[in-house]
Image (cartoon, rainbow, N blue to C red):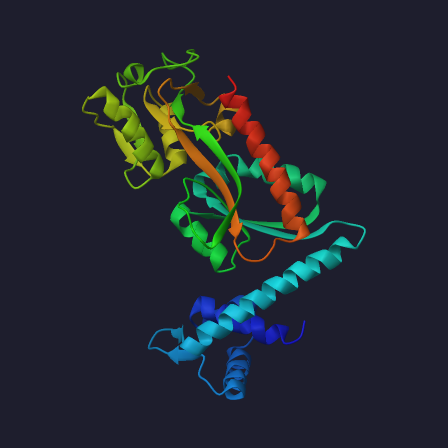
Amino acid sequence: MLHARMLTYLDEVARSGSIRKAAGKLHVASTAINRQIIALEQEIGQRLFDRMPRRLRLTAAGEILIEHVRETLKAYDRAKSRVDGLKGTQQGSVAIATTVGFAAGPMPKIVHEFGREHPHVRILVRGLFADGIPNAILAGDVALGLAFNLPPNPGLRTLLKLEVPFGAVVAPAHPLANRTRVRLSDIVQYPLVLPEPSMTLRTIVDLALARLQVSLRPIVETNSIEMMKRLVQLSHAVTFLNPIDVSEDRTAGRVRYIPVAEAQTQALTLVTRQRGSIDATTSRFVEHLKLSLEALSQEYTGR
């Protein structure tokens, strides 16, 4: 690609805010990057970065140029993926951001199964908090985002939306473990491990529990889904999660998932950028992901 090195240098400096850090990530000399930036600034007659005491910050001209740089790099990646598709093997790469809990839950199996069918595809899975996922897509760091209860964003396009109910999660030896369905009034008799108030699931749980008109004091509040699952395994506590969150743990016999009669739903959403299109490799991964998530959802909600 013409000027590929210059574009890559500029993109990494903008992300790192430092020529030295960018040089370290790209394994090149700082002077080489600095020369390229100076030459480009001279060519366009504008400074691209303000030299701050501790970091470089894009100027207005730099903001305009970096948008073009990232679009060009993404267009090149899409073209390269199409060229790779002409070869005998399916090559390319997929980049997706999802929540930390999802990355530690069903995503490894989904990625593994896709990798068996497409062994030459490189997959990047970035674990983030849900509010950081839209920015990762819009900045071009990833092509896809997957999370529960993502707020509407005009820069994003929805590829899949599943309504998934939350349920009670308990240890296999818990008194409620053999129930096929429970009511909230049954659950509140036991110690509760709840998502912390900053999580969207907590809002949904609070709305459901408010109907009971009782004062609830959870023994633990946390933003870690892994901790929530681990705590119920160790005690008679109850937590609330959706069936996809606990799919691997339930299969392994570590927890029980019990549908709640009064349960509301969470929206699991797969999104990409509104502008532009995704490449063929990413499209194949999207189809695999859709089928996997729909199967997981139906396995539990169909009970």
